[in-house]
Length: 152
Image (tube, rainbow, N blue to C red; front, side, top):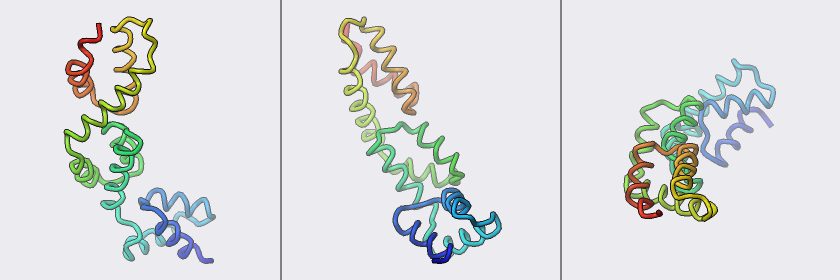
């Protein structure tokens, strides 16, 4: 099977970006020049569409893995997805849905903390956890004030 056919199958199974396909082609033994040509061909044929990839990635990471915007942005930038596509994809997630996802993550994590810890310590742990998941500090603080301020 040719590298082009292999790459077509790889892209047909799941949305891919240019960077991940180039890496996969190099793993399969293609040179940088050959992988570049194959990727350009895949883009022309519609197998790779970075706008479509960004939309699928944002939806999967926010809705399924419950990551915050910052982590999603960082990961997409590391895959060299154009910032315009990242912004468009993130705009498809409403603020209400985003806050609901973050609150769900926070409630699940809150319940795992020992009740012997002081409420302040639990809140501090929660802030650290949510920040590590890529949620923004202002969003975290607003959510804490609205939903966890009576945990004294």
